[in-house]
Image 1 (cartoon, rainbow, N blue to C red):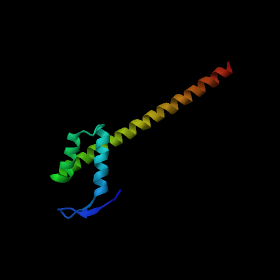
Image 2: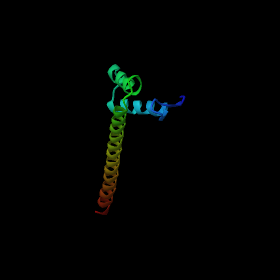
Image 3: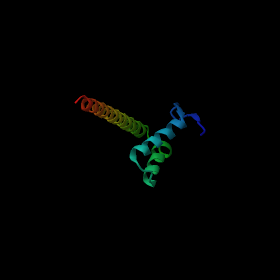
Image 4: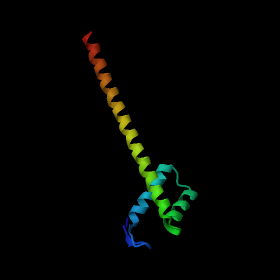
Length: 96
């Protein structure tokens, strides 16, 4: 993948890989990539660039990924606790 950089219309340094990554992460969050979602992304990021919409989309994706990570961590803790409880139960059974 080619990573390009440019200065946008407002004089800000822009990384096309970052835009592509955010679009991909948004589609993962939505769980679909239909024509409407793709058109919305292209409009927001390219055709009629809307900085507020991009910022809001980025914040939404970051919040979603944070909550997803916390959920995964909680599930892993629960799995480890269940595993530990099972081992203790087996050890207790051997004592009797």
